[in-house]
Length: 252
Image (cartoon, rainbow, N blue to C red; front, top):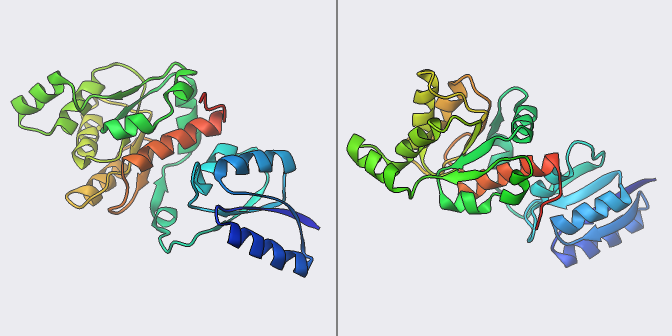
């Protein structure tokens, strides 16, 4: 009989499902947890055949939990949610071998450049620092503001120019400004930038869709949320998922 664990923050749902499955006598219920962090400990201890996982939970989401467990985990996951929005599952686009390339870049000291302080705050800087990387956001820098004013551009555009001049291995995590993605595309096409990865997940309406499509046309590794959805939190989440796939020691 296959073993199964249930990871969901709704206690009524967990207990009801356990009661139902025990009556069916088709699975051995090996345990339960109420968030992704506790779910990791449960799965690592029990090593179940199947895990029924809620997508949205406090402390750590189901998607973050699965990413943190990494490719060495042989448990099969069934995702459940009370929400009707599965757009990210449908619209996240990945270039060829991008996960392996991104993890190699992090291991080799790549730094992360974001377009918001929110994304910078959300990325686990201690985990990145273990490999020699740092997280940068230049949006509030005085020289960026001056350059944007001089050239008649946005701060996001000017901050990408500053990043391109760093001479470091860079991962770009863009969750807010489509103009940042447009400028990255221009720098790549002009041969002035060769990023290790572009995470393109800005949210909104004006030029958002078009800027994401541009990045997918560039000859660089990318993770892009097609369409209008995204955000700084999504950009940080993707960065952390990559970090935790390498090593789940989060340094908290």
